[in-house]
Length: 449
Image 1: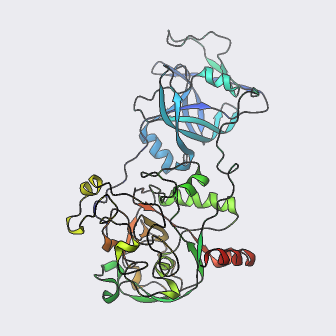
Image 2: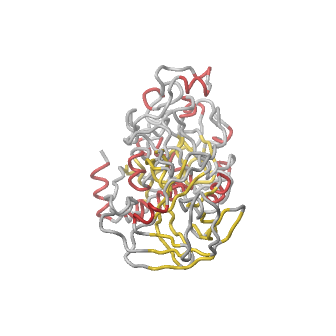
Image 3: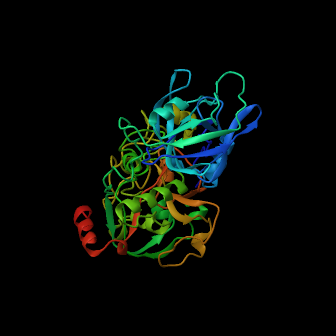
């Protein structure tokens, strides 16, 4: 069932001004790079994460400026990842004003034959692309400085006649502390609360006597067998995302609220980094695993919602997630916004039979599967992995913006891999055999309460 009010995500990244300063380096090197001119502006060619871009010299800030369209293409084609954008910080603009922007990590910056790794800069929210850090700041950091082939350069005056620039990578001064891009190195390994789900068989899909009105993509109800696995006790929180990714993209901020506004692709990057940090094999659950766990697994009491037949007791939805209760028969986006409907801290509604919280409501949850509306007609009876290909990924559980009926355990929906919404997050899963025996026993002792 498609939740009311679905609209394509709006590209959040407006015209950016990317001001470059580099991590400290132990060795001194330099390179001479030919100058080019376009529209009266002098620049040198560089590459950001392998993509050729102009490095503007005349502005006094030595910045790389990209448009929102360029940024979108860079994100889509892998030259930038959303995880490269860290949290908001204050920056000094060239004219002395202070503004807030986001830190951006360039995994690789090439200027001539100098290659810099993990270079950090800043991103402006302004369409005017203000200059955030000048060359004097770069020199003060002691990482990168610029000499103009022995010629004097006056910024703001007439264009100079120099034809090349000497880029110097210098040893850092002792007074400079290392910039903070520390998510993988400085933080301890996060512990994700997981629940062991004993495998078994269940009726997947919609049965009217159990689930109420059935949508077409919930039919036919059919028997499915699922192997043992682990699933997150809670939806992944903003604190957990921040610990791994170093940023927080969520619209509704709060450490213990579920992270949202993350695409399926963003989640894959999070999982990759988390697995590196923990040496485990976290993943998203399949649709079959998700529904089996939501229904309580082998302990299921055949509830309509995950944890009960009373949606208000187990799920944050359109009706109860704001300052007052709303009625589903008068659903509107405006009413939800005016009522301050929003996400809530995980685990504040009753758990289901297995001790899992928020599998209905709060935020929709990404699944690993591609989505197909007719998949139930052909899916295998044992551990169905989802369709082999598709345009959309499956999501489950409903959220704070959808009605209580959307939070039914049978309900299915979908979004594209790049889509981000403020009512869309995820929870993690693990194969049982992804953990060794000792770790299995530790997890079971800790979470099988």
